[in-house]
Image (cartoon, rainbow, N blue to C red):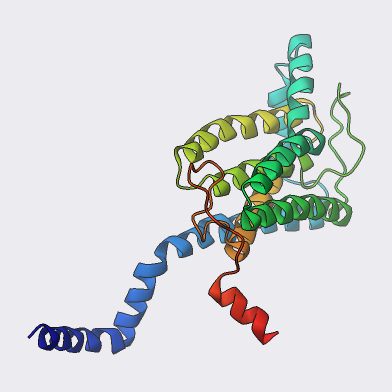
Amino acid sequence: MPELEKVNNENQQTPKLRSPIGFVQNLLITYWRSLLLLFVGIYLPLQIFGLLALEVRYNEGGFPWDLPILVTVHSLAQPQLDVFATIVTKLGSFRTVLPVLSAITLILLVQRRWRSLTYLLITAAGSATINRTAKEFWHRVRPDLWTSVAPEFDYSFPSGHAMTSMTLITLLVVLTWGSIWCWLTVILGSVYLLAIGWTRLYLGVHFPSDIIAGWMVAIAWAIGVSFIIRPLSQSANITSEKLVSETKLLPEEQELLTKE
């Protein structure tokens, strides 16, 4: 009797599974989180970056809101803020972020989390490469509205500090996803990102569009790499008490390697 009931249940479910609508419905139910992340985390940031990049490429004047925002931010300038901004802005440089990434790398090495380690290295190195390449391609000159107390002499678009800081925070969110540390990273990371962005505007070394572009391309890159490397595919988490092995390839990865 149990076998008969099982067959009847399968027969009842078969028409729904075989119908195109049912098939699509099941796919959407299964992958709606991934599709939403793909749209919000990759498509939208790339669209925003693309719009900014096209405007910068073909319009030397940039955006009408760039200069007013810069002037407004700098209108509160005073010696104490100059010192504060000069110190805080260094927290977004690659030289400052590198020791943090090195510490995380050491943790992942000790915990034998090769997948997460690979994700970190590719994301960090790729972000730095993309930023340098983009600066050389767009050749956007930095704003020159006042004499900055911390001048920069390379190109402006997209902001390296914005990309570096956003890459770090997005990377940490991915590696701590599913734990209470993820929300702490989001909250403190948001304050950190806004502080770095403010300092770049206050010091007059970036346009607002440079900051936004840096954030967007960093988000898209970090999340895009996570879709390929999948550091979360084996519940990898650098803060988890139970060590999870990341030393083996997934079945589909082994299959691809065998075919090659």
